[in-house]
Length: 294
Length: 315
Image (tube, rainbow over all chains, first blue to last red; front, top):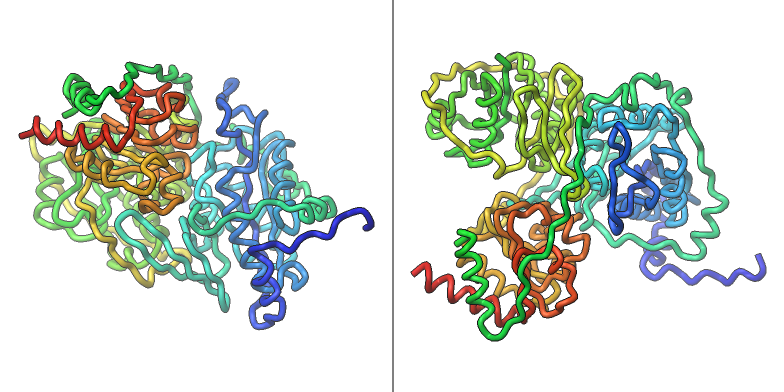
């Protein structure tokens, strides 16, 4: 393709990828990464309409999903990448705009995209979402078995962290959530989890559902080569009929929770602001004492 | 009367405050039962009686701690069926939420996380979108599963103690689960848990690598230490301390923000704090827009002076 500059080698990923390209010991992996198109938290976010759904006009790929995608790409690259037959499938469920999250994931390096979209999905809670995603994972496993489903530690809009656990329960797979490291070898995975009071190592057989924290890696940015390559990657659109899910099982109808009421919290207002003139520490303590906080 | 089941995981020698809050809430909603995992020590048994628990359920299996989440979820779901619970309450820790998630699938029940209050009809109240909305939500199913944030309910013993009966339930064979193969305890700081603390003192970029002043002020106040993402990413303090959208969400009585600009990522984790105090050199810092008391000044002057003054007043 004349006129397109030769892409620079990727500074971090390249040496590993080359080394791994000759590695024929490891089996190839088929990984599904869940990516969510969420309202950009840099702007004010709003709940709209009778069902109090989020307004998705200013939406982006959920930042926490980039860590999941990076984890998947590293596992694939260590096994020779897509050339060796590894698959990293970016799966998103959502309205038309959600395809933008998939496109971003393809630019970053996912090998293909799957967009589950259906008007009946609107208003799905975690239970309905996990039902639809479980059916999609089963559907995608028909051609060849799925080894791993990797997700972020939470979505940056709903923030409940429920879906990975519910997906694991519905699929009957081991769940390894909040992984801060992840290794796969011989059909098993080993992960490290860091809680406040302890760290632990866990092992599970594949297939498994894994969620990863923002400590696991440094997600890469899409580069020029990736952006060009993404244009040639396929995005499969699936409807509920394709995955064999009834409309009544999802959306507002199929959800097991409903929002009765939502009120925008009045914004906090600024209180007293002083400039330190040598005694601000004392004034701070006076303030705490007045508030009965000492 | 509604039956309410509370999951209590490995309480050790005494039941911690957040669980006592759950027991208090459960009693206000109906007849309370506990699904216990781990030892039933004398102290724990006494607390259950004091808090009016009618039934203590224990698992037939002893190895629930060897696996991640799945068998505990299977146990809690079985306990809910045995006790006929209409509401299942769990703590709001990451594991509490995940057990809730899986219990909900097993019981065909709606699940609500991050609740700050639950009404008698099961309606839960929570804030969403980083504290920008207050919502009421309800499970539309016959059973509801709710995880409740700490520090929103005052723990109170029952007017008359109960004599709980003990029931053992068979834990169904678990689905495939990840096995925990090693665990190391981290060195305890002696400070309160960040998510449960009444007071949090948090530091950011303005600390320039030295958390000393923040820690000393925290200790004078009996507070937990928090940090902005900038500070944890720089490695000045453990990632566990991060408050914000990708870290912990806290809503203490008092949040003291030191050398943190208060960009949206940080604000998301602390803006529901009752009182916010901010110290920052930069008068333009967004944190001053939400602070009840703001000091434009150097954290290395203001914090040590405040620490000394607190020590003096506390004698």
